Length: 121
Length: 98
Image (cartoon, rainbow over all chains, first blue to last red; front, side, top):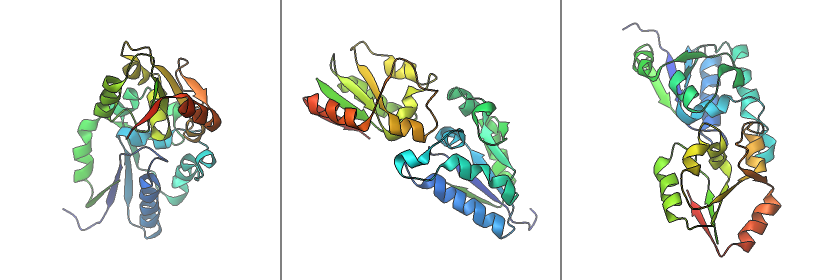
């Protein structure tokens, strides 16, 4: 294994119902600021975080989709969703606020192997 | 007539089942917070799969927050917070499922 450190952030929770989505994003931005390669995976309910047209102010929070759409400005471009979960929710990449790479859930293990640290939210 | 309040996503399958089992004919269900995701066309059939004539409502603020305004099943009545309060007042009991 190389000495290059890299972080995989695995999201699993829907937005607004808990603070986990915001906390994960804070970690991702922190990695980026410190030039630590970071990959983001949205699986299960967390795919809901990417739905465009959110209006967080309706529940007294900032809109998560606008914050996520800024990720490419922080050079965070390795963003994955699990294709089976996307289909399970009846969503397509057009519903999402960012371009994402779609992988089947079976490939999560492989993605984990490619990173030195995994953080789950 | 009871009002059941569901605030978790469809991922929580046991919770949904327990709520449906615990309902009586003519009860009402309101989806709030993360529960509004049950209203997506891909998930609503599981909520509808009962024979107890349960009318389903969902809270408009939680739907709008999550960007679901054009994604909710048409069988659901979208209500304001004020209407949620009125539903709670009319019900014999409210039962929360979280």
